[in-house]
Image 1 (cartoon, helix red, strand yellow):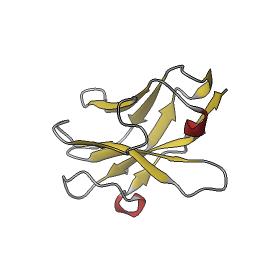
Image 2 (image 1 turned 90 degrees about the vertical axis):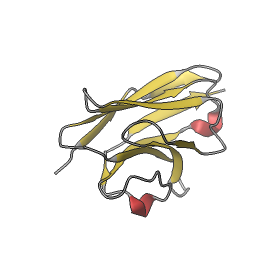
Image 3 (image 1 turned 30 degrees about the vertical axis):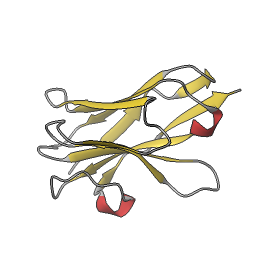
Image 4 (image 1 turned 180 degrees about the horizontal axis):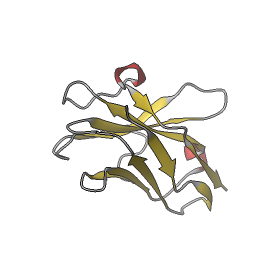
Length: 124
């Protein structure tokens, strides 16, 4: 029902910035949207999530103060602005959508749709 496509990843030096975009081709009305990331050999971890209205936002402790999640519902797009990037931020970043419920959640199994991911590599 929903197709999510991430973009904006790439190679950046430590301290640099990137903005990731997640474009949804299907209906995401009232959906909670989230960003997760997964580094090789590690479990997928929560990064940030945002409610439909943008009134509820939650960040992982590791990215607080550096990353900003936002959404433009008219464009059916979610963004992740990443500043002050660190080598430990290197991972494949995935966009996810939760079709049921309005509460921001942080567990991957609570999301229903996933994009294919975009690679973010931070060099030192």
